[in-house]
Amino acid sequence: MNTIIGKDLNKAAGLLSSGNLVAIPTETVYGLAANALDEHAVRHIFEVKKRPPSNPLIVHIADAKQIGEYASAIPPAAFLLLEKFAPGPLTLVLPRKAIIPDIVTAGRPTVAIRIPAHPMTLELLRVVGIPLAAPSANPSGYISPTRPEHVARGLAGKVGYILDGGECTTGIESTIVGFEGGVPVIYRQGFITAEDIRSVVGKVKEYSGTAVHAPGMLASHYSPHTPLVLTDDIEFEVVKNRSRRIGVINFDRYCRMIPMNQQLILGSDGDLHSAARNLYAAMHEMDEKGYDLIIASKFPPIGIGPALNDRLERAAATKI
Ligand code: TXA
Ligand code: MG
Image 1: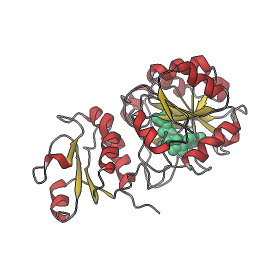
Image 2: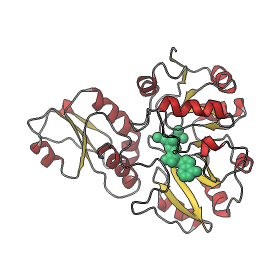
Image 3: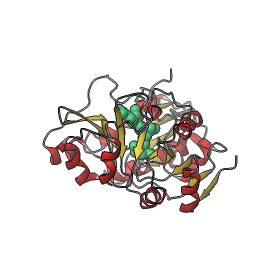
Image 4: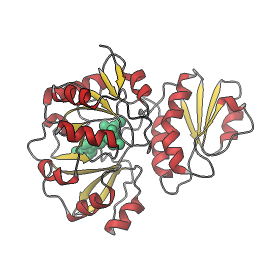
């Protein structure tokens, strides 16, 4: 199969309605989409990504008003969050309706739903008129894609069409929120923080400990092929590994102990949002260089810092 990168919405819509996969842009990361109501098409997503069948998918819809078609028993807090953050990087886990096939939810009684904020994909969702199941468009466990070329490199020959919506502006995945007794619980940290949610609903339970709320949130994930260490002392790691070929991913300043061409800076002056936008592209770029080791600096634990550290911790975890 040839992989084409293009901007033809009608072509993408035609492929999706006839049961094919299309990579789609969202504001967070690129997704690998199929008709969420077509079990056969969805099975193909799992095959192409080599994704464990126990890891459920997010269903993308065009408008918050459609949510009742796919989910039931929606708590008032969910509507408040939708009003504030949809379209946007927020995924809600809700009791599912029977129209959603088992394969999408991995047999669970809940379904994850989100309204992406990318204008091209919102238009696509309106044109196709079907909900789209879409995980991130990377081979399972690898770094998520934030540019069409990242998708092409990871899934070349396995997806026919990549809808080119440019670079993702948010850069890390949506925040996943479930509900316990009507109170929001964060299952996966993301661009929308606990503080953002608290400011709307008043209460939020923060995910803590080692329990896996969102299946598929494995210790090792988002990982480059090159080993990666995460540190809050870049200089120490650089000295310790001076006999090896190393690349450094810094937050907002260069490390003076190695050449600048072995380093990438993600943001300037403590800007965590631009760091989020650049993080995965930097990991892809460093992974292409064939270094022995990538050293990445920890983000400060404010705002979306913890969500970014969560991704880097999983990228650094040993694969099992
Ligand atoms: O920003 C995003 O969320 C991107 C874009 C493409 O929308 N998608 C994304 O999908 O990150 P994926 O498949 O890489 O991650 C989806 C996560 C998984 O960790 C999965 O376990 C969780 O969503 N999930 C899906 N359905 C769930 C459910 N019913 N209950 C709990 N977690 C669920
Ligand atoms: Mg993913």
